[in-house]
Figure (tube, helix red, strand yellow):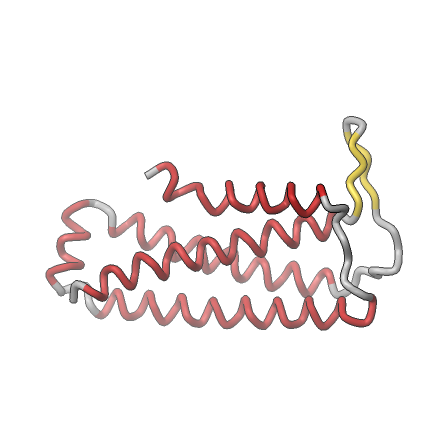
Length: 150
């Protein structure tokens, strides 16, 4: 269960490290706002899907497979996964909107413990995006395995 709970964060840290290793490149200036806008829109779509999936699960709460999930004690965990995925998706959309106000033509650097981190906001964006996708895929995989048993 440890891996199931924490793999989105682990994957995001690895993805952020790879992005940092390759110099945290920025998209071209004219594409930056469009990329942030598209990311925020995609995140909003994920929130809608996750909310609908939660509604489907709640409506099937009397099914034998959901009863088995409740009896095993994992129904609360599943709803926590859905809640976390929705929260991260909303947070990612907000982050994208905030990043639209960043000037990608300026060089942004943080120096910490002799490490020079270029464009730290893009590393946060990459890590957050990976977490959102990993959490969404986790919930989708679990929901479809439940729906197969209905």
